[in-house]
Length: 268
Image (cartoon, one colour):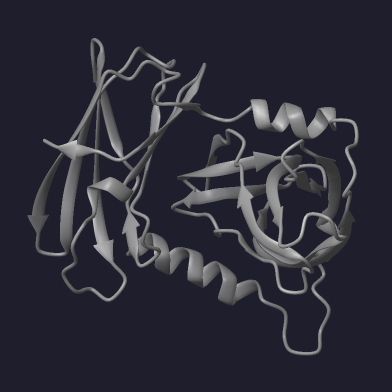
């Protein structure tokens, strides 16, 4: 809960007053890379966010001091669905807390499905992100771009960002994942035991529950040979009790040499 309050306070403190321009708008620039059309009629595009020197932005689970990104596709035309492919982020220290995100530039690949693949489609909307240097501020950037409906060459920058994703559970040869849940007064603790080779010390683990109202504290990790153990506390924003769906639990391991994306966890 403390982490949610920290992020909310950051946003509240630095939002510009009504009618005033945000003096930090120039610190982040957004372009839409139109990408290419695949043989099955799907478009592979990307949002390209370029930050001023020394600035950074955040991953989908930003950590204790981060501001989570919000993307809306309002204004898009002939777009049925958009799926985001998050490249592997980095862990950095900020005001004595660890955050997760990207430095300098983020190319965020998108799988875009048209309502009618024979017609023109336009990707439009806005991105609200937190950017940080000496201060952390929210920035909103609008975008609009027509995507190709004919087959085009693959964009190597988008392809590189797609390749730079965490490995799946099977790709990383994760042999077993179990989670032990214990109730506490403010919520619950969850301890994950993951059978996987060392991804490079230090290993940072992020828990996501699939419910934006449930916050996971920064995990404590320790390794015992081939077993990585990570423990966190979950709390609901309402302060009330809640149920946890283990099948929707997402565990990301961010190691010095590699990253792994694990979806679902068996009872421990």
